[in-house]
Image: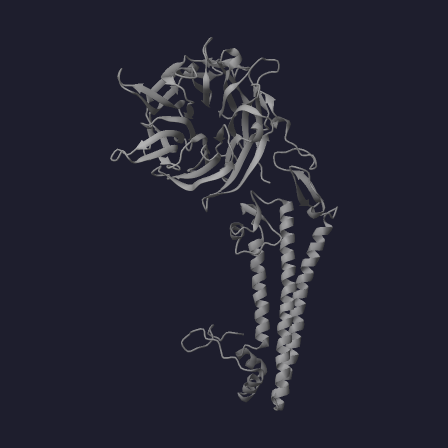
Amino acid sequence: PEFGSSGNWGSSDGASAPPQRLAASESAATCTQQGLAWWDCNLALPDMFANVFHVVRRFMITGITAILVLTPQGTDAVLRARLKSDGRVAAGLQEEIATGHASVVQVGEATAAENKEFLEKTLKRFQTYADTAEQSVKARHYAEELRLQEAILTTNDATVKSVLQYSVEGNRESLKETEGIYQNMASFSKSILGLLGDTTKSGVGCGDIICGRHASCTDSMEGASCVCDEGFIGQGKDCRAPPEFMPHLLVQEGAVVKAADLHVATFGNDKIAVVFRDPTKGDAGTLVVGQVFESGSTQLSPPEFFTKIGRRAFQPVVTGIDRFLTVAWRDENMLGTCRMRAAELGASGIRGAEMALSWGEPVDFCSQQAHKMSILPFEKNRVMVLYSDKVQESQHADVLSFGNSILAEIGDLGSLKVLGNFRFTENAVTRLEVAKVSSNGFVLAARASRLIDEMNPQIMTNQEAMVMYGELVGDDLVFDPNVVNLEPSAGNFWARGVSLIAPNTVAYAYQDGGNTQMKMAVLSIDPDTHRMKVVQTPATVNKGFSSYVSMLSLPYTESDPHTLIYYEGLQGTGVVNLCAWDAKFERLQNCEDFTWLSEKISNVAGTGLGAGKSFMVFSSESGTPFYSIFGLSKS
């Protein structure tokens, strides 16, 4: 009724110009003088009937839109949000999440209980809207009737009075109809809510019960009940970690074994390898292999030495691919020789001997070594070791330190073929860490000596937190010379870790010894040029000293990126720091600390198992080795 036949306000130039509003008495008189019928006259004027129709029509459109926006999309739903009780109806679910009105975001299809909860909240909003709109319409109708009654008192024209009286009666009838609509809407919502309540046997809601630790309340057709959070077992009141997640001895009870310099890696589909130095066996290098099943249960083989009798192994590192594994170590704590040795699992083909190892001969590849190395596997049974190297070009020349790498290929029965050595920096390096970012790409983190400008030796850059991209290309290791240095003007950065958190996105955590803080930065990798860029500047995630700082890649899922740092807490306890990564806004958020081990430990190492689970190995204060599994789950 607000529009002319042409679809606009009827102006000659097609513009949307609203008609001039007349006073009630003037409107009625003008209509009568022009000989227009009462209904036709009101079609031409924005009177009370038009306003009422507009209100009802607007409500119908708004109500349908809200239902379409808020109804889950069934199997097509990827993100679902449990809206806060004070959450507003946004233009879409994504906007509501982005503006902070979603308290919990989960991945996957909605459950029946979540759909029920969602419907209840939608109906309550629907009912609230109907009640509010009814009060608003009443106020407008009362105001309009007052205006019409005043107009009747001020006019002397009997015809106008008659028309105005018609308007008063029409206004009252319109109010009754509109009230009926809103009351029916509210009654409909109330009835459906009552039916939903009657379908539950207990009639108790989540607001009426308190769940135990590691449990959450859920509304179902049986009523509200407590269920254990993902990864925990129990009846909702006594939820606990599965027995497989509790600490276990790494070797059989009764064996005299002590472990130092622990390192662990996963390979194949379900295999695990743990290496360490055993001080009770003359610092011999020791290896334990086994399988970790989906449930978290673990089957480990007895320990065996990877060093020959009388030989020592300091800070060994291990990796594996398919049925092969490789260990690298140095034979002395200071000025040691670098050694690498490989083995093949199940080479005999005998049933029941799948975990039996066939060792190849060790290969020496560097000397004067005093720093931990890093190791990484590649396709086609290739393995890379990163290490700090030294060379003395002549008898009277200074010893030069630089970053070096070796690439080798593993053959049958653990034989090793060296494919080459590749320098990655001319600066001295230590505290090497590496994380794989693709099938052949990786990122290395290190503490390096100062970078001196060749054109101006007075310009020096600290490389306390250096990060570099590298890649296996054919039989060569290629390193990008365009390194990134975090906080180039600061110093005294000690323990560190690097991890993949999302495609082409890595996190770098380190101990800032000068400020006694643990910091973390996030870098993106250009998929075409492989150039790295800092997208999250170093942020403090913990205050205090930690003797170790390390990270695990993709600790939860690739679609739900998180960072995971494990470090030393108060009194030597094991602590995990978790942060969510917002890829859209490129920022860390919701960082939390969790104690995964309440006992004091002497050393620790970890690796990811996938599906939110991590495998940790550690030694007690006395040096006894244990293993444990912890899992991540949504709150």
